[in-house]
Image 1: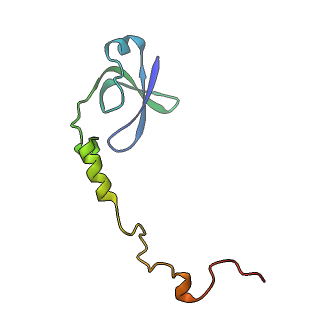
Image 2 (image 1 turned 60 degrees about the horizontal axis):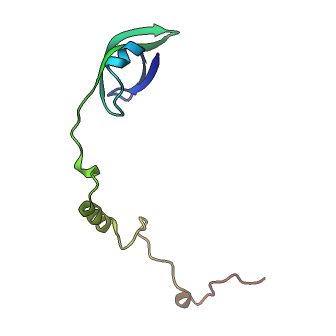
Image 3 (image 1 turned 120 degrees about the vertical axis):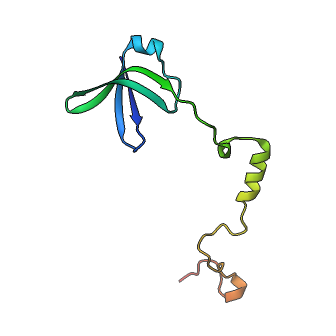
Length: 107
């Protein structure tokens, strides 16, 4: 027997139980979205789906997450900013601007 923990479309966690004979026909195929068919059973006040069939659902790849040399080069230039600070404040004054030494003074 194998167990799975999943997240549904509402962000709620739920568990599944998979028996060996079911997994031979319908194995896990890596991470992704799955269509599950089974019976809901409640043991110790906690629901579990005993899976009879499951299939990994296809998805359309998001081009924003594809990695290519051209895109990597473009993204590097796009991420460069002249001022990385998000505070929009003036820079700290230099030593010659305020006339104070920038080292610790002895008491």
